[in-house]
Length: 394
Image 1 (cartoon, helix red, strand yellow):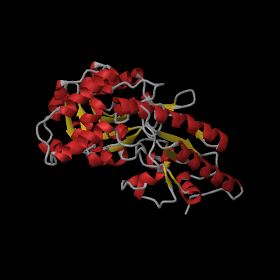
Image 2 (spheres, helix red, strand yellow):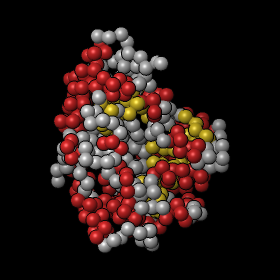
Image 3 (cartoon, rainbow, N blue to C red):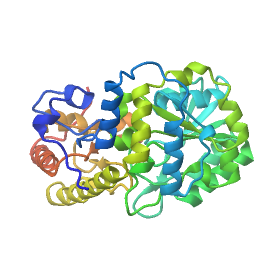
Image 4 (cartoon, one colour):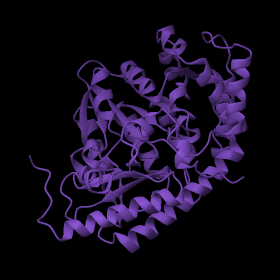
């Protein structure tokens, strides 16, 4: 099926952050929210719940867990036991609660910047201490996990690794071999791995997603994975995520969590996740086709209008990591994009110090909006070329 973005008129009727954070003359290409309409099987399930007044607390029902397990088997060949899957409010809660299970206060937790900004806050919220091991050059034109640096951090005493798989903001899909090496290091140094896999169903047709817990027995012993339908089917406001284990030892640890961790799941979120995983396949395929067309359009528009801005096309998600460092836009090009072009991007510095001179752009929008955004940025770039070097220093 064809999945196209809603019109700007309809989108501006939404009350979510994307459409309320900035004035109407700003094109919002920042937060990870798509401009596509909700998948019909999900809206049907939610409307049916409202009609039967099913708006209370969650009760015993593993429909969302079973739907996820079937989805994982169909799409990734990964066999997951439904009794090894529990629900909670969102992936950030999965991460915090999982880390609390595997570290003691003050323990080091490895993260790999540039990376999803909340990672910097979720680690201390769980009682840990952030240990940065930045991504490293892959010998070609991109970045990859620094396995040597990760081993050094483990050897120095880090007790956990917060993995982003696929990696936000680069849309980097880690290979099975890399993930297997991570698992081997976790086994060698007795380190836990919490794998945030919320972007997994957004992997493009030119890449293959590998679940961390499926790469080896070591990964299953040491890993906990975070999943949710929220990013792929635009359900962030419905509050439901999945904590997944694949070994009895980790499952036993998760079973010790307070019952409230699961019971805070939204009943609407659970209904929507079940509908997405079970009946949202056709919509997902159409959405991914639109996202991949947008990716191609973005790369073409950058080449035509902003050749000084470098973007290595992502292989997962609808988020692009734009390198403005040679464009003269300073450490925070998103600030200049907003002020001069009225285009809202996410500042690269939010993803770590490695993001200076970068910005993240959401291209899950209509071709018309994306084209206008790049044309606005190109006009701002021409202005920069005729002015003194832009600086964000105060």
